[in-house]
Image (cartoon, rainbow, N blue to C red; front, top):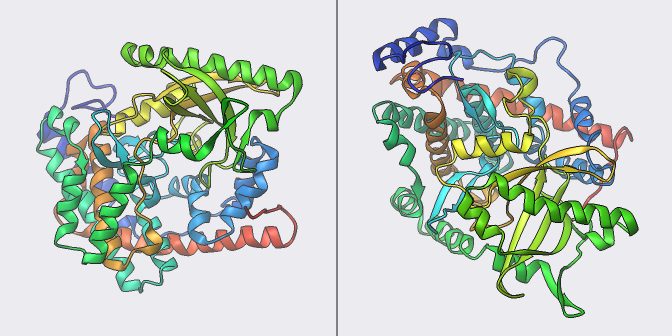
Length: 472
C-alpha cells in the first residue's frame, strides 16, 4: 500500500514529479492496451468449486437460497462471484500501483446514502471484500458489471462499449483532477444530491430525471423508523420482529432453550462491546439504547449464508427505535492474491476500509468478535440496517441512463482510490488519451462472456443435482 506522497519503504516522500514519473514508468511494465481482453488462465479452478468452498463455512440451510439467487441470471451470478473474479484478476496485468480496494465494485454497490449531517450523498456501499491491492481490479469489476447489466437489458454491443468507455473515462479524468488537488481538498470531496441533479439535468429525459428524483425522495424515508414499521409489531405489549422466513427469522423461532439463551446473551453483549470501536461521543449515544429483540436476516446475493443478525434497540421509549445489522466478516476474497489484512479482526478490516474509501459514513459503524452456536469465534461489523439508502435500479435504465450512472460510479470510485492510493501516479499512468478506456471496454466484453459460461456451469450443476438451489 502506498504512503501518502511516497511508496512503502521510502525514507522521504516523493515529489509530485517523481510520483508522476513512477506512474508513466509503470506503462512499460503494464501497457494500458495490455488490459484489453480476458483469457482464462491454464488450470483455472472450476467456478462451482470456488462457490462451494465459500458455502462450506456458511449457514447450511441458507446455501440453497444463495444458489437460487445466483442462478437467476448472469448478472445475479456476477454479484455473488467476487471470489471467482478475484482469482481471474490476479492473472491480468497490473501497474504495480496500489490503493484500498472495494473488492466488489459492481454497479449495484454504488448507491445513495445518508451522511451524519443528514445530507443525501452518492457513494460506494459494500466493503465486505476490501483490502489494499491493484487499483485496476476495482475498475475492471465495475466495467464488466456494466456490460453484464447492459446485455441483460438488451443493449447493443456498440451501446455497451460506449457505456464502459464513458465510465472509465470519468474515472480517468476525475483522477487527473484529483492529482492536482491538495490532500484536504481530496479528503473533503463528496457527491451530494445537488451535484447529482446537476449531472443528470441536461443529460436524461424528463422520465429519467423523474426516476432519479423519486429514488432520492424514497431514500430519505429508508431509515430506522421505516424499518421499525415494516419489520416489527407489538406482541403481548412488547415490540418484536415479524418473521418472514427464510429472509427474516426472529431468534425465538430460530433457536430454543439453552442455545437460544446463549446466542441471545452473546448478541446483547456484542452491542455493549462493539461500542468500544466507536468514537466516544457515538459510544455514548449507543449506550442510551437497550436491545429489545434479535432476528436472523438474509442479505444480498454473494453474502447469502453468512451469519447476519438484525438487532432492535429502543431508546427514550418504545417508539424511539434504532435497528442495527451485525454481519459476519470472513477473510476477503482478495486475500489469497494480495496478502492478508493488517487487521486480525475481519470486521475491523471492513470498517477500516470503508472509513478510508467512503467520503461520509454511518455513525454506528463498528466491529466486534462473537462466539457462535458451534463454539467458533466469528468477526462481525455492525452498522445501521437502513440509513437513507437508495438504489438506482439498472434493470429499468435505458442506455443513456446507464451511461450517466456509469460515469457517476467511475467518478466515485476515482475519489475512493484517490483518498487511499497515489493519485498522481495513477493519473500519470492513465494519461490524457483513451487507451485505457478502450482496453477496458474490450476486457469487459470478454469477461462478460466468461461470466456467462460460469453462470451456465452453476445452472448445470443444479440441474445435475451437484448442488441444490431454492427459490425464495
